[in-house]
Length: 119
Image (cartoon, rainbow, N blue to C red; front, side, top):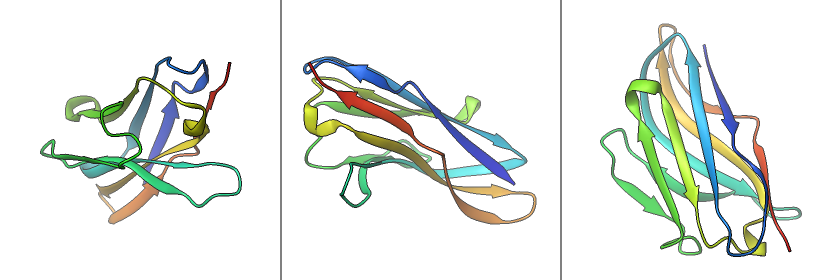
């Protein structure tokens, strides 16, 4: 079994920055692709950014040039650096990953962290 826990959310002003972290823990053998998703009130959950184990990345068009995803495989952690924040970035941000443990490979979600962008 594995767990994902996000941190780093909070309140930011428009144009400001936040850095999210997501740490995986448990009986981990391999962490595959890691992604950040977000869900705003009344909207569906959407992919924000994704990074493969090898470091290849892709981003939603709405965050390209503003957000950067990275990972530290040695620390089982993925990051999301969010710059030039906009009010429409307000959402609960979730970490997601496929993880192989001693029991099986499965898809995991973190509990989420709130990001609010407001003046």
